[in-house]
Image 1 (cartoon, rainbow, N blue to C red):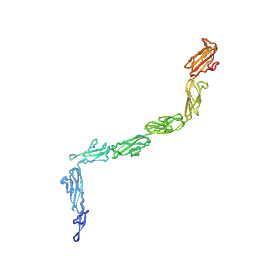
Image 2: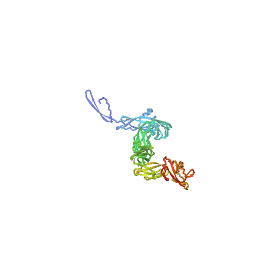
Image 3: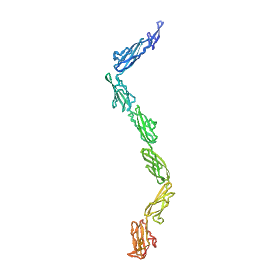
Image 4: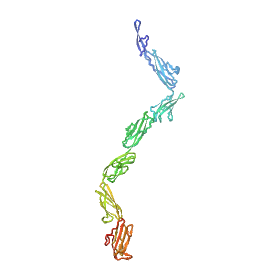
Length: 578
């Protein structure tokens, strides 16, 4: 320093040599040395013991003395409590002080040592009230959560009465003693003014204190998700439909059983289950506040129907009948779609359960059947159907075979080596190739030929055979006096006649007898000549007859070759025998 009276701050204790030089106006100089002793400062420190609210606080000096040969010379306390008047200070080493009012006070201790070195320390001292409501809560404040409220209240005893008001419309909670913690659930999000009020007996007087804080409860999502049932081999689609109360979900955790390793963190994932059945799916959703909820619900995977069908032998030109033999799974089958050749050609398709289809030509065809049950599950089968050739059945008819009415011969004209089945329409049948059929009654008969080849393909052809037994027999003699009733009259025998007229003449051309009477139902002549004329018996001999007749089918009678001299015409002779 160049000052006349300088000052200097020593940062550490010790003995220091100080040199001073002095110059006069003639620039003459002289110097002097002198040792300066710098003593160490004391290191003030104290501790205190807080007692119950109505007692004094005790202070204890714990100052360290620094420097050899020095001691503490004085203690000066300031308790930071000016309202206490003279009691606010003390020069005792270990004083006590009573704070009448709870609060925080700044206490200062000033220490001087024997070397007159001084230092100080200030500490904060809290005077707790006799009773004080204090509580804490955990950080995650979510609706529908059990939230822990911890009562940290200060009381002079353990028999304080506590009263909680939740501000959410639920009943208040009251209890005596100390319960840590107490749980409460807020049903909805919002800001609630939670109040804790405690009461205690202090020096015979009931003292109360309360604490009200605003508790903001965040919304907790309510987990929902959609999971429509699917069919096996389809992907199950899951969609988060949770109620979020205005705070969107930020995290999703899906677990798909039966494998707990099958998980997803997507909002709307898809998952494919290996087999049909009912599976439990769990979804946990969480928003940005950490509020989360979970839901476990079943999801259904339907089994598939098994498509299968049978068909009759397929023959060209004939219907092939298809029969559904599919096996249902979880519900009945309600839809069928058939494609008999070309899957894109609608005319070759059907929507009925057991359809039939006619193939016009032989060959190999691919038939597809699609079945769908009432849950919408589908299965498809493709199968080859061989269409075989079909015989062409035909025959001709020879009527009156061997000269017999009602007897026909059937001549088979079906090409190929087949087996045959005939139905004659009269209750009789045959398996011969060219059978003969006999009919004994008038009528219309359907003669049917069924031809069957080696592929079991058949064709049927039919012929309508109409049979009318018709004829007129003229006897060539009669004997009126005979005992045989059958030859007493000259009476032509016929059947199925529609018109009929018979006349008999003698050899001179005189009319002896005539008749036109018929049984109209059977067409049978009803009268005969007894060999008389006007009541007189005619002599034995030959007489001429003439007949005109038609049958019910409008065909004429062309005559008879019966009788002596018969010519096969509509006239002839008959012999009267006496």
